[in-house]
Structures are given as structure tokens and as C-alpha cells.
Image (cartoon, rainbow, N blue to C red; front, side, top):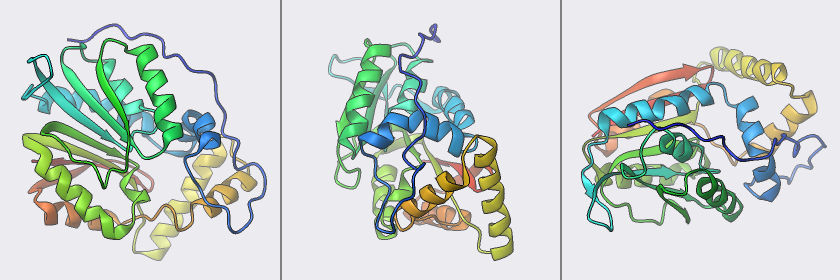
Length: 261
């Protein structure tokens, strides 16, 4: 049952790490500087991110069937937020479910991210069963669960490691559970891909990014964020066992896929 949403407690933050020239060795990392501006960065640089978040509770209501047992012996739905950053997905879910309904495990490799996520989630949803874990998602064991969220996470893993992560997700999901996979992509057609990329930069310009910021972030993410094509994502999901998966959302070169166990 839905509950009233508390006002989220965080300061107004702005995206500033890429306002000065970066040397060629500079690389994007989720350190304290990025964490400080992360909410603003996501809002202004990921088309449709808010819409993707808003749909997560709607998906959860359809596919989370209270099949796991928590430490108190209660039946709950367990959800994994893999690559949780500041916990936006976890916070969105907590805002639409009663504390006794969900057990959320939010995992990120960045201590700076998990430290801030822990504070935000405890401040806003102290009664919810949300565990924030600092770990590499390639190394963790997943318990049986109803839903897994991989929002803008797989793209930061080496391509060779992506199948193993999805294998682990598929094995952990209960029958009827879902994976929500959101990623930046590229197209094989160079002309089509170039149009999408330029419109993406137009999107960022419309949100206040300068040419220096756009160039700086592009250089920082080179060889750090490695995109796949949409077809590659679907082929990989089929390869690990998902018989049904569909692209439910696309905004320029960003897509979100739901895969059904």
C-alpha cells in the first residue's frame, strides 16, 4: 500500500567536475567530487532517467510476490539495486511501499557513493529494510529475489564480465521475477549513431552544459564507459536464459529493457 512521501533531504548540488580542461590521462571515477554533484549530473545528462525511476514501483507491484523470508520470519519481496550510486532507485521504491513489504539490498563499489547513500536512505526511510553494501557486483552472491535493477551499471564493467553478472542475476531471480536493465547504447549505422550522439549533446546543451563541460566529460569517460548496441543487450539476455525481454523505454541513445524469468 502506498504511503505519503517525505521530502527528500539533500542539498542542491551542481555538476562542476568538468568545467575545467582535463588532461588526457584524466578518467571518470565515482569519487567524492562526482558524488557531490551526482544528482544534478544525472538529471541534466541522462535523458528519461526520472521516467525510468518512476516506473520501478509500478513494475515491482506486478512482479514482486513476497516470496522471500526476512530475519523476522516475515514474507517480503527482495530487490537488488546493483550499482546503486546514491540509492535513487531504492529511494523510489521505498517511497511507494510500506516498510514491511520490501527488503532492498543496494550495492555499489564506490565507498563515497555508499556512504552518502546510507545517510540519505536512513534519513528518509529509517523504517525500511534497506542494506547498503560496498562491494564489486562481480564478487557478491545474490540471494533469491523478485527484482534486480541494473541502472547505468553494466556499461562500466569490462565487456568480458557482463555475461557472468547477468548469469548471476538470472540464477537469483525467482520464477516470475524481473531484471530492469538501463544503459547508454550505440548504433552500428555510423550516420544514425552520429545523429543520436549529436542530439544527445544538444540535450545536454539545453540543460546548461557548456562545450568545455561536454568535451571534458566525454574525454573522462573514454575507455571507462563502454556501450553495447541494443541488439547486443538482447542477445546477451537470451544467452543467459531470459526467454522474454523487451525494450520498454528509449530516449535518444539511452534505453531500458525489462527481462522476465
